Length: 139
Image (cartoon, rainbow, N blue to C red; front, side, top):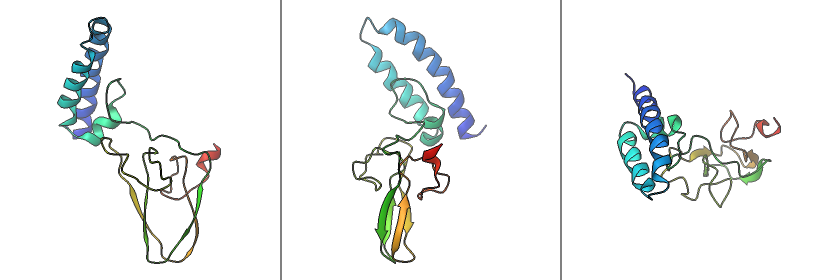
């Protein structure tokens, strides 16, 4: 069985238990400990696969990036310079990474400028041509 299959099974099985126990724990205040136990159990399999399979409350993993902008970021890039595009959408220095992805399955994407020109970095994080805009924000 692949890591992603194991992670999906783990997230579904433990996630269902979490939801059932969460209802009981809400009144007793034990909820946070249960969420941490689920994270520790599942995240050891494969954090990236676990993050995609995980949709239950209490996890630090994100299944989708945040959408910081509905338009692309126009940036004048310099030939030979590298730029690190934020893929999680949490950075306060959009469209570039500031490390806010730590604790998620997201990592920044390196863009190497081959020429000095204006490029349009994706702001909605839904582009199929990461890190550049492909018009996905209009859909």
